[in-house]
Image 1 (cartoon, rainbow, N blue to C red):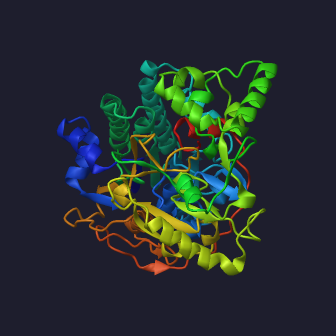
Image 2 (image 1 turned 135 degrees about the vertical axis):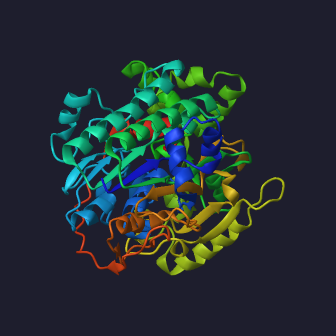
Image 3 (image 1 turned 135 degrees about the horizontal axis):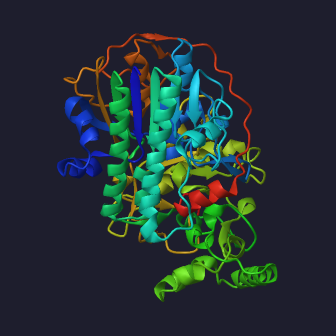
Length: 533
């Protein structure tokens, strides 16, 4: 194996360094200590489904086309998948030079396309994903036993960490089996639990330690068994405690006259604001009971008794978990306030997009803003959002800008119209309606802009500081470890830790037709983690 790329979702120095000091992670620590290492700047938005395609293509979302967990078609939505990625991956580029690859658990790689090697998809894939080559999943389970993409959802709190550690072992077992089977020049294995533990168990540092130790053991086994010439460890973003406010952007837009809301009916899941992880585990009751409750909640909503208000009341008296365990998603959505598209000019559709969309005439089914007024409306939005301050008078946003300042390429039209970057990523942006603009963060730990990179090996100059390293630089740097040129269309450059081999135009990429994900289990898993709310 010439080069091994290890992905640690959400890893950053503030998490890793205390574990290094305790000698919890001897293998990962050795890569950092013996090689070149430092912060790795993420992109906007710094979220898993958009950032990993940026890593494996070397291109910004405006080129590869994935901006969020969700893809939109008018007001309809679906969870993104690999067919939404419109640029070639590292392993496909390596295939042009006859270099084979083994790729395990990398997000947004389902359904896989044919290439020279093997691929087992990761996050946002179905639980039993298609692999490449066909039949590979059955071969893996025959060889190593059970293989899952996600942990079981019906486990106790005490079992949860062990299930994540089991998933970590599955990643390592599968990767080592496939590396033996295919003898690849390039290996890429990603560990997701290093991020999800902060969402599932915020503040539980013992759980964080257990999962990182399990990851380190698998990385060590790979290094011992396959002895790659070069090793790179990268993360898609960092993670940190949010100690300031939840900023309900849609509530602000309503106050400023950009947005109108309605009650009852169905809409985006991001607007069913009682945490879905409480709901999907609950007993929805009989069909008759559920339908009756749904109609009752919808009626109550017309008189101002919304799901959002019920949640806050339930939390105040300590009954949120009890109520959440008895109510189905449809019931909650019947009573939740939702954006009224035909009467709104702008709204936040998904908080992890980090931005606001304009309800543009001719682009959206019920668009209200004429195209001639687009730029004027956008300027008005930017000015309004730039003025938002916390109750202490501090700016909420570090930057509010047109999308073109952050994204370039043919897929920019899929992006938000106005990008909103939280100040120092200490403000938790929310699309919630039905409350005050400011509140306590509903997730006390979340994503930060600064991830991490470390690299050592025969082609790595460990004396050089990878200062200024960016997410987009990973793919061209991996190519350079093979002595291969970067794709001239990449936004990233080769980091100075590796000698550049120049650049070239690779053969034209022929993207496949986009296909729906349409998988309720994947949607529920994203809801568990608070990404779909």
